[in-house]
Image (cartoon, rainbow, N blue to C red; front, side):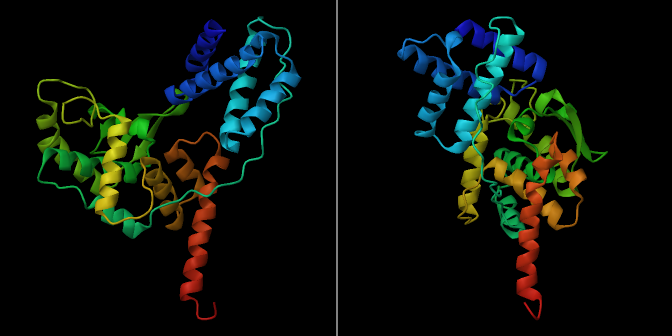
Length: 293
């Protein structure tokens, strides 16, 4: 079973271009599924639809709906792969039903909160210059954190006002950059990055104090620290900045299709959730300023 899971995740990585985090989550979900069945003396390859349904009930007692839905997706996709590979004849997971998920509106920062956050880094130090460029570029582009941290200097086309990034499914896209972010990145490249790089010669744009590429955990700590410094009580994360980028664009009148392209969403329905946030904002503006609201 372990070997089949490794083959499955390799297939997803090569053929489907799924991210490392998704592959890791799917692999962990399948190992837990295997453990549950083997504790009951059942080989996963011999599991019946009824036994799989029992596992979903077991998960539902411990996990939220989104986690259960991801587990079901992993199991269904895995057994579909086994059928394709000729390991089994029929997919016993095909009847598993995904729980209906509530449509959760993304929590965002206001424009004022975002501006306060971006002003917090100390531009007199190399780390402060890095952090200013990091936050400005994140808010200017709405990149996923993995896309942002995997950037290398040659991905930047600052004179043209855009950058190139590799998104989900190994799809490259060009994303425009605003003037303030361009200026922050230029200053970082001129006066900050070389000091951090030392002799390491790391290819990544954003470096830590040891001269190697900044990690997701490192960036998470950075943005949390500046959130506290800015007096923002909301829980701040890199992904919340991505949500804010999209919502602020729509509030400012950007069309949905353009925001979809900038975010790298394959399906416009994924982007449409931000229209609900924009409508909520417009409703609040109307109530506050219309004389008969």
